[in-house]
Image 1 (tube, rainbow, N blue to C red):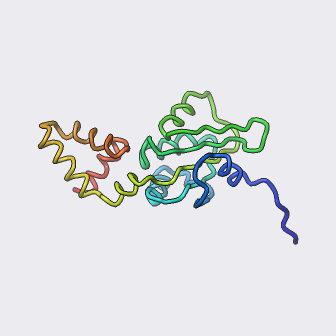
Image 2 (image 1 turned 135 degrees about the vertical axis):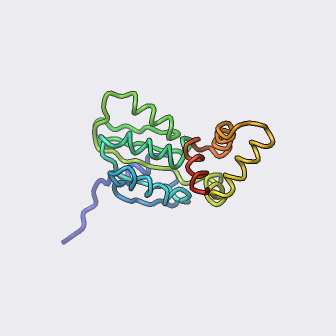
Image 3 (image 1 turned 180 degrees about the vertical axis):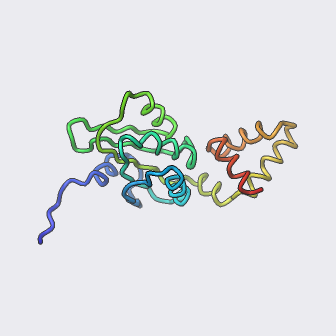
Length: 175
């Protein structure tokens, strides 16, 4: 046997994505089941490298919803569709923006490569800060600003660049 170079969607997508290429991880397909997919995303939440996955066109919206919930709507992502083909398309931006773009479409077709930007220093600090820090910060805001838990959760989520539901989940896990 002799290896023959050929097109590789993930590598072509990575190079054209605009995301950092100094360190990356290709992991094939994200799990199809939501719980397993979220667990996989939790495991790479503070990854210092660009993450590259293939995704089925009928699951890409669900996958991005999980990216928004687990990694935050501000995380940089790229959805590369039909790489090296006639209808090639790259959707670049924050996870929340790219998700809304895809939701507005009638259907998403073609081969999909999903790229997730590496965790920022804020993401890593948030992950390291942990559940205890979230509970303390929520209580601090409630005491200092005389607001209810819902308002404090919203403020913590904004501070950390993640969804309010993610902060709430972390708060519940810490109780």
